[in-house]
Image 1: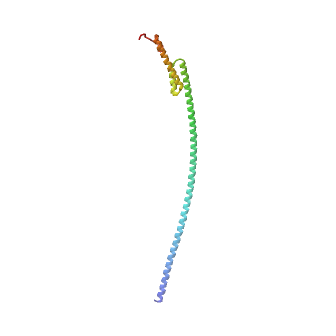
Image 2 (image 1 turned 60 degrees about the vertical axis):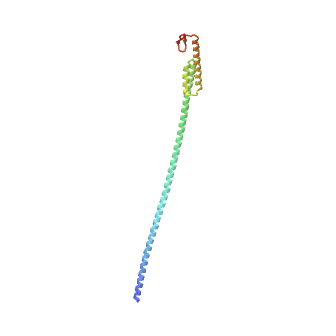
Length: 183
């Protein structure tokens, strides 16, 4: 081989080396660009993540404040409802006491009427009034006593009338019908 060929071969080898080095340099530059882009993208994603975290923290605080406010409102409404329920209970109790007092006063009046009717020997009317008492108070011992006494008096009167009739009276006093002797 001659010298020219060797020089030419060396020249080609140098040229190929320069081309290879140029390609490697291009690849290194591209790699640097890619690294820079990746780093920039990483910073952007990190910034977005930080912003999202801050927004989440802020939203959590807002929700906690709303929850606290709602809790306070619910407690206040519950307190008001409890007060209203207590007032309603007191009013109902007062109404019951008032009605019981009215009923007791009516019972007392009816007992006085029944007693006056007993004193006036109007036993059936006394029984009727005593039955009004038992309609108001089924456990009234006064009403039961008046009914028993009035029934006993009516029986006693009936027996007395029967005795008078059988002994020869010509009229049945309780009903005012003249008796027909011998029938």
